Length: 484
Image (cartoon, rainbow, N blue to C red):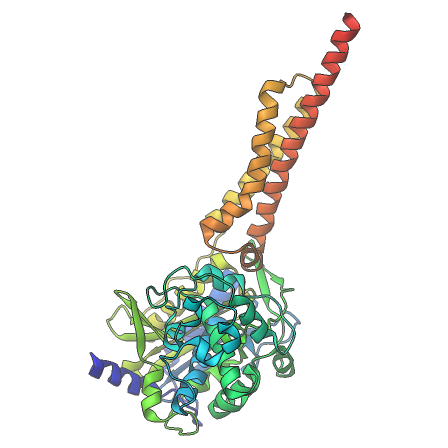
C-alpha cells in the first residue's frame, strides 16, 4: 500500500510545481467537444463567467475563458476567481513547509503553537494536533465551521480574532475519533501559520506559495485580490444570476477565500523539482492520505483521494463561496488534470459543477457527454408552492373574518399553533439542513427569503385569527348585552 501511494504522489508531483510549460497541440476533436460542452453548460446553468484549463504531462493541453464578471469585464485567463475550499490545499502546503523547516510538528497540539487559544479553549480542544486539523478529525463539526465562516471581516487581524472566538466552540466528537469536514480546522491552521511564521497569512502565501508557484494573480486578502483584478461574482436566485453583495472575508482565506486566475491554477499542475518550495520527501507527504473516512475515499492535506470509474487514482477537491464554484482534479496515472472556475453559486446547484467535472473527464476519455440539463430544484418548487398556498389561505381568512362567524374555541388554539410554527420553522430548518441560518442566507438566498415569507405569513395568519376572533367575540357580547 505504501509503495502504491509513493508512486501516486511522485507521479502527481511530476506535474505539480512551477515550470514554463507550453501550450501543446491537443486533439482537435477533443478540444472542440470541451469548448461546445462548456458553452452549452454555461447557457443551461446560467453561469455568467467561467475559465477552464486541462494540463497533461507538464504542458497546458487546453485553456479557455468565457463570459463576463459582475462588473461587466470580459473573463480572461488572468481573471481571478474565488477558489473556495481549494484554498485548503494551499494552507496545507504552507503548514508542510513549516514542518520541513522544523518549526511545526504534525503531532504537536494547537496549544503548543497558539497559547492564547489554549488559554480560552477546553483542554480537549487545545490538545487537538496539527495532523488532526489537516485530516479534519479534530472534533469540530461541519456546522461549527460554517458558524464562523463567511463573516465579511475587514481587519488585518481578522483571522486571529475569529480563531480566538472559535476557541469557545464545543467539540462534537473527541479529537481523532471521526472525520468531520469543517472550515474551523483550516481557520486554526491559518492562525498557526501566522503565529509560527510571524507573518500575516496573506504575506506568507504571497512569499512562500504564490511566488514560487508562479501564481502572479493570486491573493489571500481583499486588498491584494482587488489589486489583482478580482471582481464580484453572482449568487443564484431561482437559477438566474444576481450580482452578489456578499463581502470578502479577510478571516477566511485559509479555508476558502483565496482568489486566483486560470493561469495561476494551470501552473499548479506543473510542479517539477523546486527546492524553493519543498524537498522531495515533503512533496510526497503533501499528497499522501491522512484518513480513510469512507471505503472509497480518503482525505489528505487539503485534498480528497478516490478512484475514477475506470479504477484510476483521482486526487481532487471542490470549492465554494456564496458567489463562486470551482473544481480541480488530477489523474496521476496519466499525468492528467483539469480545473474549472466559475463566478456563480447556489448550494443546490453545486452538484451540477461536480457533474461537469466528471463529464470533462469523460470527454478526455473520448466519450460524448450528455447535454447538460438544469431545471428548478424540487425544493425551490416546494417552497414556492407552499408560499403561494399559505398566501391564498391568509387572503381567505381575511375575507372570512368579515363574515364574523369565527369560533373562539376553535380559532384561538389554532392561532397559537400558527405562532408556534412561525417561531419554530427557522430553527427546524437549520437543524434539518445542518446549516446555520447565515450560511443558508448566503448560499441559498432564494430559499432563505421564501422561508422568511412563509414565517411571516404564518405569523400574520395567527394574528388575523386571534384579532378577528376577539373582535367578533366582543361584538357578540355587546349584542347580547343590548338585547338584555
